[in-house]
Length: 420
Image (cartoon, rainbow, N blue to C red; front, side, top):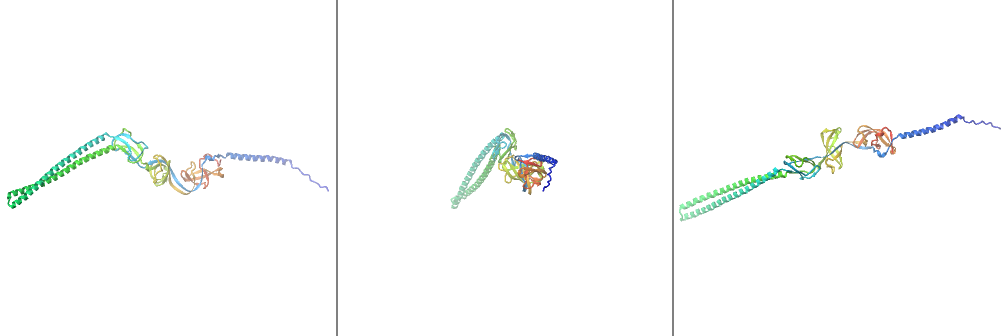
């Protein structure tokens, strides 16, 4: 039996035309998408990682400090003044010279003091000779007085013997009463003479002591004058009373100066302090007794605020910082220092290294590193208080975030930058 077959109808020609038109359009769209994507990537700027500085946000205590700049200064400065008027002959030191106690600083000349010392020595010689003469005369007078006493004593002894002998003869009947009485009278006279001679000896001895004391006093006065004039002359050699470094020399050789004229200033470098300048705006934050870290070429040391100047100059206030444990080893007078005054501590803070140009308590635009360090995204954050080195982040940054802290303000308009 024959089967009737329906003939297959071929697709209309217009469908083929549509499909033929869609293929080029699809290919064109893909090509356009690729081109657009390539164009977008071309607009993302790239930054060399070697040119940026990053820091990882951390959580923990943050010590707030006030920065200051200054220099080392001497806590004690001794003025070396001229002890006598004179003419400066020689200066043995200059600015920066290290001196020891007793070291000769300057030599003065004063002819008047030389003449005065010569006259004093001559006067001492005269008074010394006078003393010797007085002593010789007193000695001779005492010898004469003592001789008179000895003679009177011998006469008195002889007269006493005569009285006893005459008394015995009178008793035995060999001598009359008149010779006996005469002997008694002679004995009484000799006793009086001995008493007077002894009194004269005492007076002579007292007079000799008085004259000797007076002459000795004149010698002592003359010797004191010599010593005083010699001390004044020796004082023309001006010496350092203490060790230190010469800060200034205020006279030149040949200068005629009066007594107490300043010759030099010597700073005691064993007790240096730091004098730093704090901005007036930071003054309410500081107070005496606060700890200060002082950094110099000699190293670091921890000091304390000892004094705040009562007035400001050119927008800053002078602050004296002393060192209870001593300044850094090798610290030099007038050497520049940097100081960080510790004013407070935030117990728990998210902080990063201070971004370039960022101020405290301000909103900032930062870039956070992502995608394994291949790119950085722009974020908005707000900073709190901080130090020159680190600053607290109030919002916008979490602990562990890596933030670009160097200056990339030129890319602030781009939401993303590539890191290469």
